[in-house]
Image 1 (cartoon, rainbow, N blue to C red):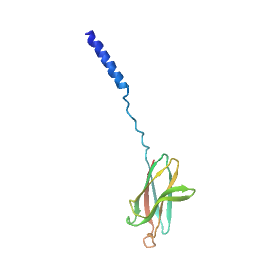
Image 2: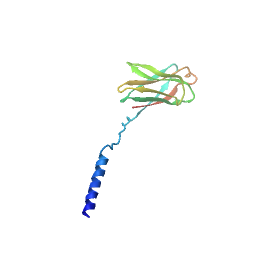
Image 3: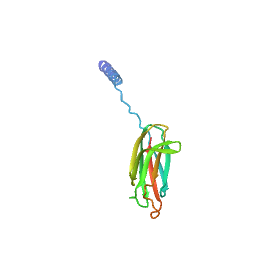
Image 4: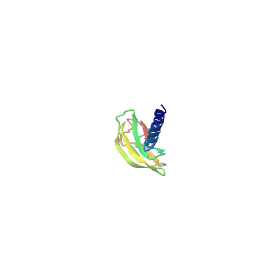
Length: 139
């Protein structure tokens, strides 16, 4: 009986040591939490509106023109860029954007970025101003 107990204790010790040696679980870096900013505004004839935001981590920025009213099929200008002083320097632009169009780029931490919605000739005295919503997700 004593022999079985000693063997059992030795077997448990060997299993414990084998499990502790060389058996590591790799860890994956935690992706940064995404932040969502929502901007709304009114676009007038020949006008443009700029919205700025700052990101905390390196990663992908996605700007989506989520709504254009009163007619979602109307074309507007839509750009994503970096803010230099008070100027939005467009890096990506779509001069024929419609509702649900998106722009995507990469950014570095602490950078100040901007989205701009602008008239490309669709806003007229007859149509009146357009309303819009832009959603930006970023790290």
